[in-house]
Image (cartoon, rainbow over all chains, first blue to last red; front, side):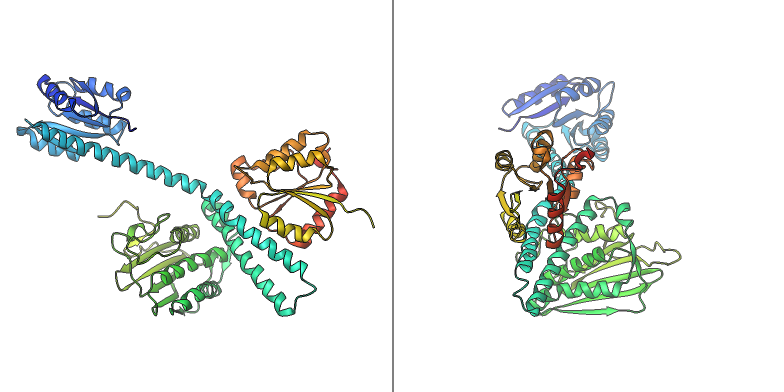
Length: 387
Length: 138
């Protein structure tokens, strides 16, 4: 059973309080009233209301002050201001200060019911958003535990059997068979290593990863990433073109994780490009930075989705069909790139394609120019900041 | 030829156990239990030369519980413990970096999954030879 919604009404006019109580009598609400701002605010901590109806014009503490104090103590509270017709202007002012809506006096019972329902719905959504955000934080915190147990354990079991079988059969295997065993062990070893690195990317402080940084030549990392995704591309008849502008300065970092970041971007491009399409991996040097681009001529990303693509568990809503993946690839890519003091940005046009751009400081470059990326969304941007 | 040494393995992943057994079985007798409770009971029943112990079993790090209990038991204290785990970092994360120090959880060696056959055989042989000597520095 759900708990009853709690409503606090603050108004100095008995007639308003009484008529509100009358209207709410038939509803399943718990209602408290206060005759002035001070008494109302004093009630908030113990009554713990979901919705507050507050008169703007009261003797003593005004409705504005009540709003300001409510906002300071609990910004999730939903407040509706009650106001006379002559003061509609101040009601608008109150909304600018965080009130959810306003109710002009005199109001009909239906108007009160409607606005209350909408206010409570808003409250529910606010609480739900907070709960979801908290859940996401918990997911992130437990991420390392989930990854290590759910992904590493089965892989370890497979690898252990490969190792055991190879040892068991060593006398009977041909050289070619031995070589296949070695390749299998290598592939699974790479996967285990990758998971280990992911783990570090999410759970280990960036400063710690940096301790193991060495100068990395990018062309081999690019080649390896392309090679890894080649079978997936071939299956969809997608060509992957490489355009590496030499000489490319090295970057300070970890070759494995950087390759992983590229694999994620290329994999993403292949995933969202129709059969027969093209993916291009470009690299060039530009003013103390190395620019890596993964461009496709695929389905593109809707403008409203663009700011969210680097979020955890993001998967394009508009994506055709059921594409595999947990929606972590781009988030990991972002974390990897940021651990390398770089940025990753995306530009896309629906129906035309998408380009992801990684900017990494070149190793040995004198200074790094903080020139902004002109793309539509960048990892350095505040996620909530879109106009 | 000397009598074959008796090994006990406690790990809840049957596939992983197979992989380890295929390496050890030509040289040792390996008993296996797939949960900590039966494993601990078996330890009390029979004298083993070495315990191969997984950490993350059941609802959490139940393997740690076995290692702790063994450390408190005058008899079981002498059985060498080889921890084989895939989650060294996770244990440190959950229980603090001291969690796997031999002083807190009695064990003689910790290997990470998967284990190279050569390394596994070397360590198993060495641990059996050394017995429980040296644990806790006593």
